[in-house]
Image 1: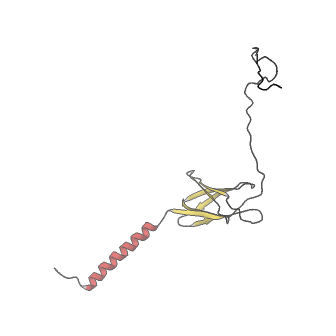
Image 2: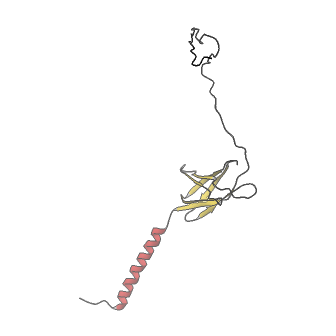
Image 3: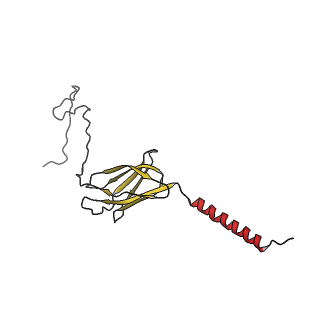
Amino acid sequence: MSKLPAKHLFSIIFLLTLTVCTTATVVAQSVRGAIGGSVTDPTGALIPNATVSATNQETGGKSVTHTTGAGVYHFPDLPIGTYTVTATAPGFATNSSTGVLVQVNSTTALNISLASGAVTEVVTVDASGNLLRTRGRYLNDGRQVFVKVSYLFRF
């Protein structure tokens, strides 16, 4: 069995080390990015626990998070693309930002300011049903109704 000269052994070890390091670097590369920032009120005060959503405009994929106690949010692992970012909080108007670009291996900074707004509630009433007659002894179709009332308590 022949011995390799030290020069060749060093070259082989160097090439193996270089191959391992290059492979590890390529595997560590990502095709994802991030969005992060803060949510504030009109005075600049940070809003804790605001709901923030990021919707991919191409795929419709949606991610939702909440701001921390310090009013900061972060979407750490989003596919690259263009997003609509929406922020909401009780007592504030909703704010949407469209065209937010997420690029490879970078964080897009987006600070959001929410305007004061009224809390609204929508009540839908469907009045298409039949009317109920509350007085008299006849139903809507003309049939007479007899009601026997018994008293549980008599004085």
